[in-house]
Length: 209
Image (cartoon, rainbow, N blue to C red):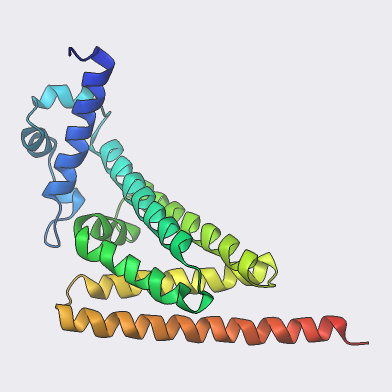
């Protein structure tokens, strides 16, 4: 079946994105990639690149967006599988670590560009982190009797902790990753327990005659 011009354009765009992700590694940052290198990996002529992206920065921002979306979708599915409230943190952390292990180049891109030299990239990663925080805060608020402010504070602490753990996980051996995952789960449970205590204290003050 002959593909339309629009379909072929989308296929080529996808090839460029996938090629850039393949070239990324723990040793290689996005800024070290050249347009010609990405085009060669994608199997296209360098000039064809400009039919799909204005420049390498636009491609990089697309990678950040795709990486954030992929991780958020995975975490949503993890939360949907959870029925026992006691397993929320464990399932979420294990799912996150699985993503880091299976897609290290994607997470490394988010992590490195979070403090990179490009303002546009830093803003894009910060935006992705805020999406995580808002989604988690909404989930926490619906599960607990929290105000939105309380839920957002807890969510922000949890997201920062898990992302930092993910950074450590990039260099971990399997046994070390298991210990790191267990530590992150315990730390998050401490945060959740502290949030519960603070929320109960607020509620008692509110209903006090």
